[in-house]
Length: 217
Image (cartoon, rainbow, N blue to C red; front, top):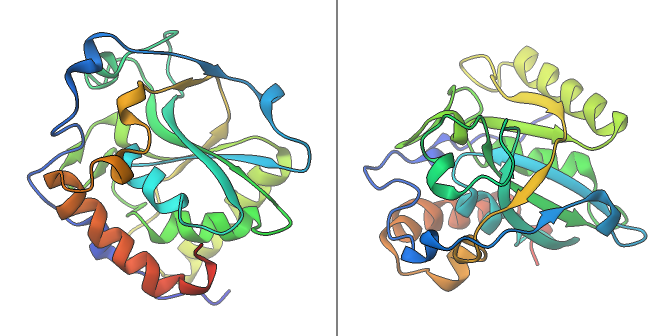
């Protein structure tokens, strides 16, 4: 499998971490559990964790065929977690982006390609300055086909030596998705001047445009 040259600098290390500049609305979170019953006919769902969900959301919102991207939490052991609880690293949840897409326009495989190249999947529970299990690299598959494709892609990347270290991405069955508080949604679009957006997300977006120019909206 020929793989586009990786850009590790997308995981730019900075002292500014996810959550820097977050709104005080955290004290009054708003929840709405998402279920598979909400998938529009002819659409599909993908759920990825790749560090701070602000980054993941911003990246996938730019891909052709992606209808919606919702930031949230998945893979933990307590119901209705708050952002404050997630940040302790004790709930077991990962920050994720749940993506509704049109398979006729963009395939799950193409989404995986963007996923692998827009974060460092070889660092355990860390992306840059964002450290903790909530920032782990994860693919939560919704179908057996997604599981097979993700595992195959991961195996091929490891075998090809695309990364200097083994991929540690967790590939696991989807669990309950909890929508993050309102102030986390569309974060880059609404807060582009925040330091985290400027120093961490913006470089990712610029390199996304170079690597996937033909696949962007």
